[in-house]
Image (cartoon, rainbow, N blue to C red):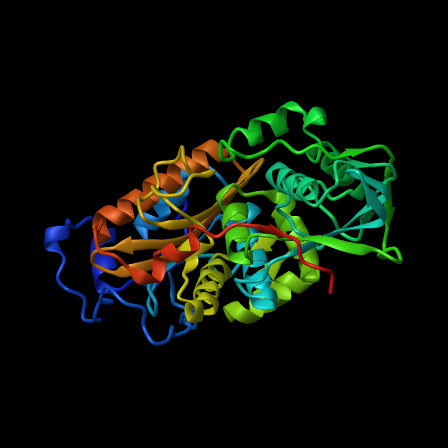
Amino acid sequence: MPSIKTTVSIPIALSLFFSGCSNSDVKPSATPLPKPTTSTPAALPPLKLGLADPTTIANPQIEEYLSQLGAPIVSQGVWIQTQDTLLANHQGTIPLPAASVTKVATSLAVLKKLGPDHRFETKIGYVGTIQNGELQGDLVIEGGADPFFVWEDAIALGNLLNQNGIRSVSGNLIVVGPFYMNYESDPVTSGTLLQQGLDHTRWPAEAQTQYQTLPGDTPKPEVAIAGSIQTTATRPDLVKPIIQHRSLPVAELLKKMNQYSNNAMSEMLAEYVGGAPQVAQIAAQEAGVPAQEIQLINGSGLGVDNRISPRAACGMFQAIARLLHPKEMTIADIFAVIGTDPGVHNERPLPQKSVIKSGTLNSVSSLAGALPTENQGIIWFAVINSEDDVNHFRARQETLLQTLMQFWGTTTKRFVLITANPSRQDLSAISQAIPFD
């Protein structure tokens, strides 16, 4: 097989690993290893990505990994580093099809524009009068682009309407602005779903299933709407306020989006902050990489024209860490922690306690995040593979990460920089009788 030229920068410890030495043969690196932390540091330094032009050399171990992929070498990318030391780089600065690692860029842009505590507001009002449990007029819902308004929220609104004296509506359900429900962006479709959710006699099987997850004493709402679904861009005159619904905070929305790699949520959020070009611009600026290393056509990663370099992926994770740090939050509040959080990673043998975002398209598999290690502290990594069988790519990625963890050492240390803030776990959406602005 022809020699594969791989761009790498290898500290002493890793070069011994690549030479096949066992852990016991490795002498301590001259560079001090990061000390495990037990409290939040005063400030987070930027990830040093200036090691972008190391000497191009041929390395047999990296060659072996790439050759085992059975795919064109030019379609593969790897970037691995500590806070300030580049450990491995194969085409790390080349933008490659990133699949759902694109959601890292969306997460970064949303956090930059909105902050982790922003809540999307959905407002409910009416036109007409309420008599004997009937709204003689129209029910109005003013959407605020909440990407995670689902059956449970519709049930909560229905119960609040019942408590405020509305059990039926003689007129229409008027949908104003960007109202999404169950990840549907079409206002008529979302309005129809809401109409069903407000009235338990019209619940489909999915709504019945979700109701079973609610506390046992949750009432079943009944708000029968006689009219049709109407849409408008502006709020009708003479609307009387009745209920305000506030979504989960942005951080918790992003966590759900990333755990389950929800494409609809990521598209909605990306559009809310300006669309794919704006997301790419913000992400590159915050990550400190050239603009050409993040090229996006949407916020989800659907499509091979969403391209991100492995270096940029690492930089975006660290940029998110810096944005969250003042709130005593970490990337673990935004992305899945392996072995702790449910989600799309459940079936994969990935290193425990690592914080990871994966991506998959027909012939693309990507994986990026942070690994906690005994000997090197937190390792930031990104691996992007394309143009071959996805299952094979995944298996090779898993073997690579497990091999690295064996060398650098699995750990029981608690690293605050990748530990979720427990105070965020009980946050929820809020529905209450609050007037319009």
